[in-house]
Amino acid sequence: MKHILRFLLIVIIIGVAVGYYFKNSGDSPTGDKIIGISILALSFILMPLFIYHRYKNKDLSGYSILPKNDDENDEEDRSKLN
Image (tube, rainbow, N blue to C red; front, side):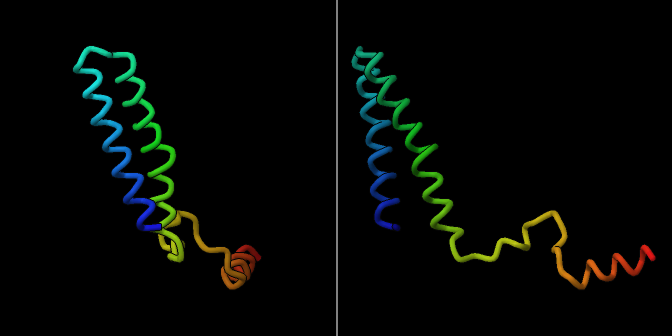
């Protein structure tokens, strides 16, 4: 996965560079399309893969705003209401 992420990042950077080259050489619509496709790939392909790679097998329950639904907490809440 690490190698795939690096490869995608390099391809996207090259795509943006090629797009700017075409844009500055006078072929603006083609350059704009290449830059746009590169940014879309960065946003919708590379970023989700990167987030998945970094956070798989991690305990993310500490980042939750809502309290845990433990049976003990439910019993305590019921006893307070009675």
